[in-house]
Amino acid sequence: MKSDNTLLIVVCVIGSIIVIMRLLQLVSDARGRKNDTRVEDVIARLKKDSEKELAEKKRYYEEKARKDIQSATAANRVSIEKRYAYLQKKFESDTVSKLEQRERYVQDREKELDAKEYRINRLTSAYKKMLTETQQNYPWLANLYSDFLFAVDQKLSVRLEEKHPPALKAADNVRLIAKEKKEYVKECKLLQYQLNYYETLFPWLIDFRELSAEEAWQYAKTPTVGSDEEDTETLRAYLSPEEYAKLTEAEKYQLALDRYKQRPKSNWEIGIEYERYIGYLFEEDGYNVVYHGAKMGLQDLGRDLIATKNNETYIIQCKRWSQQKEIHENHIFQLYGSIVSWSIDHKQGTVVGLFYSTTSLSPTAALYADYLGIAFRQVPFEEYPLIKCNIGRDGEKIYHLPFDQQYDNVVITKSKGEFYAFTVQEAIGAGFRRAFRWHGDEQKGE
Image (tube, rainbow, N blue to C red; front, side, top):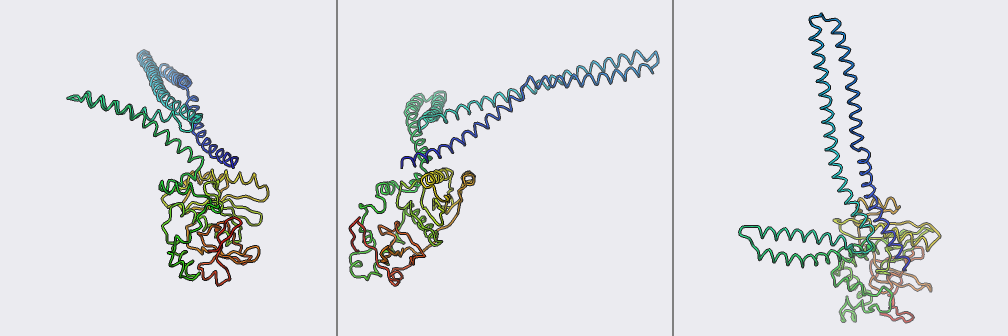
């Protein structure tokens, strides 16, 4: 288990590092473009072009002046020579002025580039510091944030002192509160970054945000399905003692099932319900399905379902979220890490990753899913038969209700005559009896 968790952590961290390294590459490219256009090179090129332009025009005017002077009379020759001397001098002056303007433009541009380079260097330094940060709660960033808010409060205190009339006592109070606030903000940010860090490495923790504190605690301390500590009185939670005693088998179990379906569900229970529905679809298609998420709880490693048929295995993750939410890339990374871990332990056959959800992928998650070869299916939840009618090794026919202890351990194989029933009467009519409670080697009937 430890090696599986380590592999998932490595995959998630690699994905984050790839994004940051891409940003650093963009910064490096920007700096390279700036270095390719150094001011000295540009000015030298402008001077060379201007000198060439000056020489060409000078030759043109000299040739034109020579012809005009040759064809002019003696009286006009001096006047023409003076005019061309003036034009040549003006042209040289205009050319020099134009070159100086170009140099000033290039120098102004250099200042802009230097300012951008300074900002880029600061960003680069920040990214590198975050990338090499050894502590998971990013103390450097938390300090930066608290210092910023502290500076804002300090500015407020100065404003109180300088206003007319000055509020000196209020300014002192603001400074005192700002000092205490700075430490609280820093601590709050440290905890926030630490939580984000954990949720990046273990995306299933995000699901706890959907639960109340009480529900999250209840789930965390609830033993996994099939343990001896599980409450075996589940059925009586849906029936009164009178109903349990007086109703027939078909009536009381059907009533309990109806109330189970109508009960208020936590978001976590809604998620398990969706996993079971997707598993049902695969079983209907002839797959052997392991309900890994429902059985393992927090230790499922991102494998909600494992569906196998014809030497091909699907590692499936399911998310029943509202349409307003999106699946982000950390869930894709977790599923990919789980696929790699499974492939290492199971050398035979083909392994494919599938992601089922009631909502959509974010653009980044879709990009990574496509690159990593993880198929995505957006499938809404629909009502389906919940009663598992299973045939044991000894041929005994047993039906299991969704709140039964062994429900998620039961595999339905259609080719053996097993099926899902909508009603208890349908199961009984097909010759199936109610499952016994399971206590290891000990079995008791309801």
